[in-house]
Structure formats: C-alpha cells, structure tokens
Image 1 (cartoon, rainbow, N blue to C red):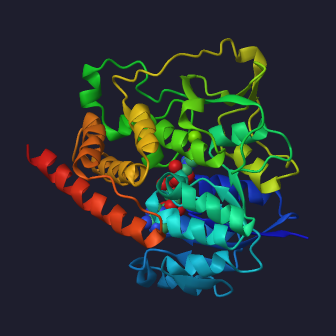
Image 2: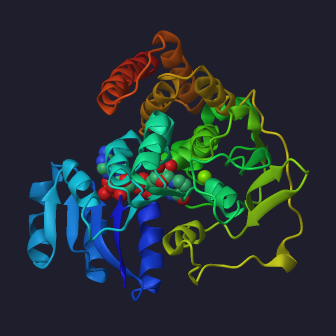
Image 3: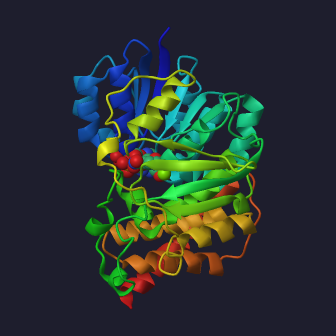
Length: 394
Ligand code: NDP
Ligand code: MG
C-alpha cells in the first residue's frame, strides 16, 4: 500500500528535498497534495515531473496568473487560498503531511494536520514557537505523530528509545545539546556585522536553505527558535537545553543521559536525510544522499556561541521562560525584521534591535486559542513595520 503524502510549501527548499526523496520511492508513496504560494515557475517544474492529485495556490493573487498552468494540467484539481489546505490535510487519502510553509503563515495548516491526526513531518518550526502548547496538546488528543524534520530535533529524536513519541518526557535525560553551525558570520568582527549584506547572510557555510531561515541562521535566531521548538517537542525545561557551536555541521545534535552517556546523530548536511527518516518512519528508506567521508573529516570542533554579538539565543530563551505571548511576539517581530533586512531596508544588527523593541513595547498577554494568536501576530507585525519605517528614516 502506497502512503498518501501532502507537501505544504512544496515550492520551497524543504519542499524540493521532500519531492526528491519521494521520487526515489514511487512504490511507497503517492503524492496527493502540494501547495505553492507565489512561485508558479517552480510549480510548473514540479508538475512536469510529479503527478499530485491536488494543487493549492495559497496566494489568491496568483490564481489568475496560474490560468495557463492550470489548463496545461487538466488531470490535477486546483484550489485557491490557504483555507483549502485545512480541508485537504484532513482527507482520508492523506496519511502524511509535510508542514514546510515558512513562518507564522504555516500555523493554521500545520494545526489542521495535527487535528486530523496525521503523521506530521514538521519543518515549520515557527508554528511551534507561536503555539507549541496548543499544537502538542492537540497531537496528544488526536494521536497525531509529530516527527521533527529540523535536523537538530530529528537527530535528537533518532537518539531516543524506539517507543518514544514527541510530546512525552525523556526517561533518564540529563540535557539536550543543540548544535549550531555558527552561521556565515561566526568569526566576523563585531563592527563588520553592521555592513553585512543579505547576499552574505544567505551564503550559509554548510546548508542550502530558504532566505528567511538563512538569515535566522546568521543572527542565530534560528537556534533560538529551535531551542523553543525543542522544549515543546521533547517536553523539557529550557534549562535542560544547551547550545554549542559546531562549525562542521556533522554532529546534528546530542542527548546526554543522567549516567553521563551522550548519544549523537551524525550525517552529511543534507535535509533529505531527516526527511527520509521521517517519511519512512519507523522503517529506514535508502536514499542517494552524500555520505560522510571519514578520511577527509579531520576535526570536529565545539565552542560557545558569541552571545554578545548574537543575542538571539538568549532572547529566545528568556521569551520562552517568560511565557504567554512572548515567543509569538519574538517570532512575528523577527519575521518582519528579517524581511526588511532582505529587502535592504535595515541593517543586520537592527533585526535584533527591532525584535527586542517589540518585546519591550508590547506588554505580555496570555493567549491560548488560534484566533487570538493570529490577532496578536498581526499587531506585532504592525508595530515591527513602524519600527522598520523609523529605522529607514533615521
Ligand atoms: P522557503 O522559503 O524555501 O520555502 C517556503 C515555502 O513556503 C515555499 O513553498 C513558499 O511558496 C511557501 N510560502 C511562503 N510564504 C507563504 C505564505 N504566506 N503562505 C503559504 N505559503 C507560503 O523555506 P524553507 O523550505 O527553507 O523553509 C520552510 C520551513 O522549514 C521554515 O519554517 C524553516 O524554518 C524550516 N526549515 C528549513 C530548513 C531548510 O533546510 N531549508 C531546515 C530546517 C527547518 P512560494 O515559494 O511558492 O512562494
Ligand atoms: Mg535546524
């Protein structure tokens, strides 16, 4: 029996890697649903190679522009708008949902897949940062299996006992150790950070990824978001998570148990590996990914993050510790600031300054239901955009 797969955010970097793995195993998987937002060119390429039954064009403005593409693939059912994802996630034909839309925009569809009790391959870490308590509670209620695609969390999951499910506490745990490449500016002098460009920030030394997560990796906010993600996925206190910079990105993360044993998962820096693990789970799929060349691997280095120059990890940790809407505010402000940096409106250090300013200006609020989260998210974005404007003018 082939398993039905939906890939939300199929036109992105994770989407591409997922489709590559699926293509290697046509006997095991059937592509039921894909979504694209603005990139119709990539959607066209995908449709030439893959045969999904349903395509969702989430950005409604693109519907008209997609007319000729829709005409070219008459066997495919096309849908317009984000809401279609929620219904398609719940279809009985869909067993696995790959949640790989970037940012807060992915929250509702991720939650829909969890509420429908699917096997959810979670790349969209922002959904957990915003609404981790709710998402994990819904998974416990419906029996949805959340499998982390993020390489660090996937590594941790692989180091845990076979019967372990995300959301449960880890027996005998001492701490989780998240590894962090340090990003492209790991060794750059403080002053030079003022002048780095979006192109420089997107040149990650080890991984090829979408623009937003590449900038997050450069500010180390990616590791901050991942720290919060890990707290939710593995039911651990933030004080039980350490972050260590490991420039080679070979050790993808580690689990230290109370007896002093440390387990790690190693592999090439290729997202097809954690994706294949999660698609095949609990079996292993064979894939054509690069293997570690042990003879060429001279050193594995580990060092502390430069928190003074890259305050994002500690800011995320403090936001999580404070609770309520703090992680949501952190995430929304960061998304706007990163977009402003990518479009050349602000400088690199202002990403963190704007995020911090939003956290300071907006008083802490409890939030528990999605509608409240969406309202709060919009409010934060409004303030962050104003701060970008002020920053552009000064
Ligand atoms: P990309 O920017 O490459 O892709 C994002 C995807 O989301 C695209 O399909 C895009 O559509 C779609 N999208 C963008 N905005 C919206 C929106 N408002 N509504 C609906 N769909 C939208 O990102 P990545 O693939 O790099 O990252 C995806 C997620 O996975 C992120 O949460 C990231 O943090 C996480 N992740 C990524 C890793 C990586 O290696 N890339 C590693 C670990 C986690 P379109 O292109 O058509 O506009
Ligand atoms: Mg990661």
